[in-house]
Image 1 (cartoon, helix red, strand yellow):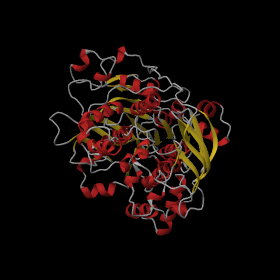
Image 2 (cartoon, rainbow, N blue to C red):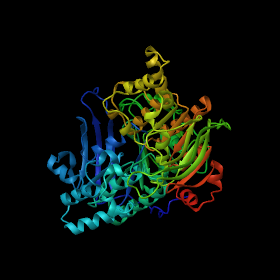
Image 3 (cartoon, one colour):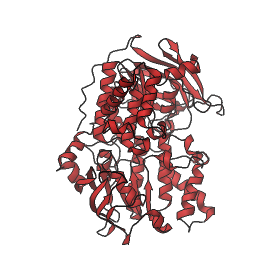
Image 4 (cartoon, rainbow, N blue to C red):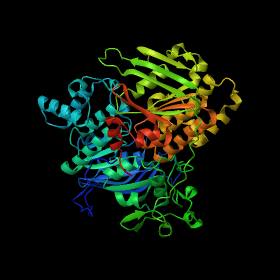
Length: 603
């Protein structure tokens, strides 16, 4: 179960000529912050020609902020300090005109949310065309050929037709491939990737990862790869830096950092990462990162089992050990093997009574020449956890949309708790409360004009009439604790949160409705490994405690194996295999299922 990517060649110390982008003492802060506090502080990075540098850590640790600041992209009145040396010149000294010429040409960036990054009013062909016309001297026929080649390389189906389509006409995974094609259009020297394969299935992820590795080596592109997926980073990255509370706490050659982690934080991240060889559901790291970098102590000390009073008695320098840099004064006292972690019991809570019946369900979208769902049949028992897996475009999310009442089935029968289901507009509030859908992209499901408090209060107002308004804050604070968010997020808008934090808000809002059936559409794809573990733990506990059922769409097969009672494998709208989690992952029968499992990276 490993990617078909060649083994990483031996890493040698880079020369000055090899370093394409050199970050020195990078700091990011905002005018309203107290003196001495930073969102990012003292970050040193070297992006080496032809290599991939992974950047990992929990949501809110400053990874995306540091990455954007490193190419002189300022957001929301940021104050950026330090240096970013590119071609011998500090990017922070560039004029706005010089930066605009640089971005999209020699330096490219792929955002975590492809839907937000692409212009919804232009076809994807037109958008790539604009970039090539701005930054290259290619003629019309050469541009068309480059666009079609890029889309084909990224695995976008039928490129000739795809260039005429708009972003909203693509699935989440396909849209991410389009964003990658756009970023690579001008063959940049530096490529910043912020969770670029988040929405992709394992087989497409394997193809894209192999392609990124190839272009880095063949074209000499330097890639900074932000990811929560430690297994992916292990397979693709040459170097890795681990961030916590705005600082780098460990950095070095990728396999050393992940196989023999030395910082307590890195050890915990590696220990809780889902492994395909392990079916246990492991809880996340207790607590959450602080909002700002601190000057006078170890920021991780409050969550560290190895902390001593000396850890909070002054600034912690980076210490060199075994060709790695570690920000820990107790590094020589701590074992360099990941902790085993404690697993959660998986009680069998499902009954023999079906909650949901799906019989010969079909869905054909207007104008489509194929069925998105083709004669799908299954029963979901009360308290059961069922996962649906398959490549992007296989119909997984469409199944959830029909059950949620967003899309109308073309044919077939659908019932919930002995009541036939139709569109959401024909459902009672009680039924809407009983079936809750958590979307893959929290950015598009949370109202940007509302605070987190208002978003959560609305769920109580709509679906929990028995709760008095005077008790709203108590319910909300209790939910924040469950999903691992601090109270300070209540009075900010979703835009002020990291991608993972926004998804946690969406999950918490759903659970406040106390549903009987939770529909989860790739809900952990934007989450770091710690929060992902916490969310999966929460879903498992909800099932066990309240008898709620879960339908969980995911590309993350190790998570599916640890969480699901049964698994449905879909391909091109059809079910190719159904079985228990053990049957699917230990004894897969269909060649397609076998290929999905074979594409899972080893960790």
